[in-house]
Image (cartoon, rainbow, N blue to C red; front, side, top):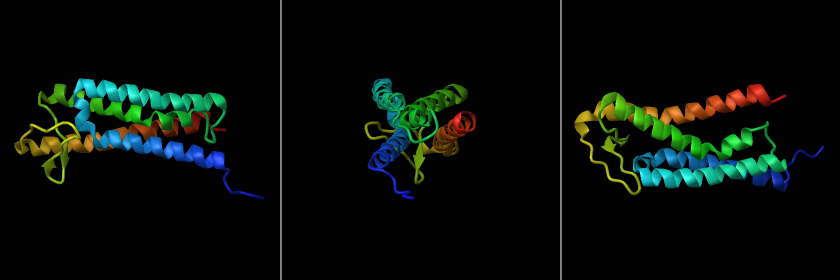
Length: 152
């Protein structure tokens, strides 16, 4: 019995890995999503990327449980929306602009510069931890839910 994956399966899994990595890139560049123009541009791009997963599911090019392919291709979208939600909650809950911290310094995005002060370091550390952990937990929760409800 030949258990080697076909070329189609290899391409399928490579696409899913690339899309998941794009979701992590959204997490790393979360400071850039504070600007509404960039957020909506990222949102359009991630929706387009996610629609590829819908196309893969409709055409039957899915080697996972139903809807898991769509979940993986929408991972940048899920990360983007979760990051924006976390930022919104922190702004309205604490009445202070949150900034991510990386290596005890305020983290800049690719296009955005931080204007925060390190005197609020504890607040920024909490924000950074939630910003990194919550989108991953949301993804894992949805993945587990889909596996438990739609896999035979």
